Amino acid sequence: MSIIVQKYGGSSVADAGRIKNVARRIAATRQRGSGVVAVVSAMGDTTDHLIDLAHKISPSPPPREMDLLLSTGEIVSCTLVAMALNEMGHKAISLSGGQAGIQTDTAHTRARITGLDPSRIHKELEQGHTVIVAGFQGVTEGMDVTTLGRGASDLTAVALAIGLKAERCEIYTDVEGIYTADPRLVPQARKLKEIGFEEMLELANYGAKMQPRSIELAAAYTMPVLVCSSFVDAPGTLIHGGLSMENRNKVAGVAADRNVAKITVLGVPDRPGIAATVFEPLAREGISVDTIVQNASVDRLTDLTFTVARTEAQRALEVTEPVARSIGARGCASAQNLAKVSVVGTGMQNAPGYAATMFRALYDAGINIEMITTSEIRITCIVDEAKVPEAVRALHAAFQLEKE
Ligand code: ASP
Ligand code: MG
Image 1 (cartoon, helix red, strand yellow):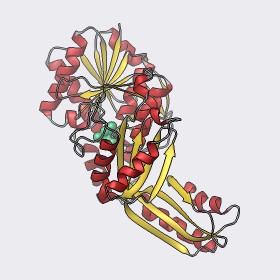
Image 2 (spheres, protein in one colour; image 1 turned 30 degrees about the vertical axis):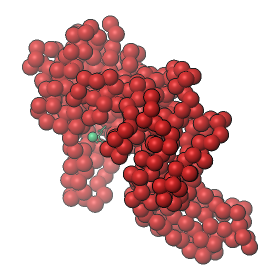
Image 3 (cartoon, protein in one colour; image 1 turned 90 degrees about the horizontal axis):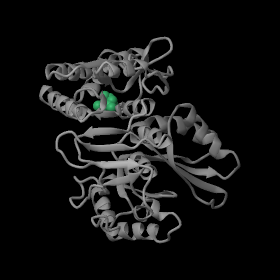
Image 4 (cartoon, rainbow, N blue to C red; image 1 turned 45 degrees about the vertical axis):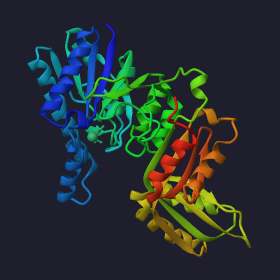
């Protein structure tokens, strides 16, 4: 029997009515003849509420307790979906992440999956059960419950699809698929029929609402992922590895990430080892640094600028200020309200003109570019956060993404 893994996000199971709707969809897939394993997220904003609640009790709750607490959100939704299916006359059983065989390391609140034992799921499927798995969680060797990081129910679904050798992984959400840009910003945005893993990974890392780790995992095992709506019946977007040459020859989409701050170390002496001295303490603190720009020095002094997530800006500044003093730099400056706008497409590899088109479009829209970074298939400009809507619209138009 072929197996399909489906994942339903928090908004798709936000109340009793929606849970019944999800159960109907699962039942319909089952009736088409496949075994179904459905992964669910916590209902609505449950995870956010649990985090708030914990912080009302303790400013820094122990991560182990946090994980057992947060795991309850998905336990609630998976049991309710199983009940809804049983009510409709379908045999279904809910499993926690641990019961489903998801083993992880001990890095609480951001654990990594270290193994998957699919035997329990197989046993249930053989008995004709539909299996509903609590997303975003696993269990350590010592039987402690872990969570896999925010938004990681997608990761659970992809991991199960791979471990169960499923036909594909279907992600049901509140939008109809992956668009050329956020349709709330660009009314002309077009839903993509398909997109390659590498392009999707860049878009996800640069602001598209998909969990990047799940795309990385799907790419590593070439597991096709279908993203579609849990509310309307419409063809979604297939993320996969086998795109034709034709489709590779364009910009796939525009992404925006508003969670950006920059820190500049001013008047840094131009000596070997300085960059390492600045970035090692940030790495030790677990602060992930993104774009880094260092100018050519004038009179043996230079400015070193880097970006971090805005949520980590304060901590990054606290780490960097003493370092700046210790190396004899002039000081540190920071700017909070920045954003990244990116164009992504495999077509830009070895093709000239994409960067120029991007910069011209932003200039014509009156938008100042603060920093620029690129990968082989992406160009990113750091701009004022307030300019994001105009920037995304300008880029969408400049690359003619409204056209098929
Ligand atoms: N409920 C978790 C979160 O909100 C996991 C998920 O939604 O995928 O981050
Ligand atoms: Mg959620």
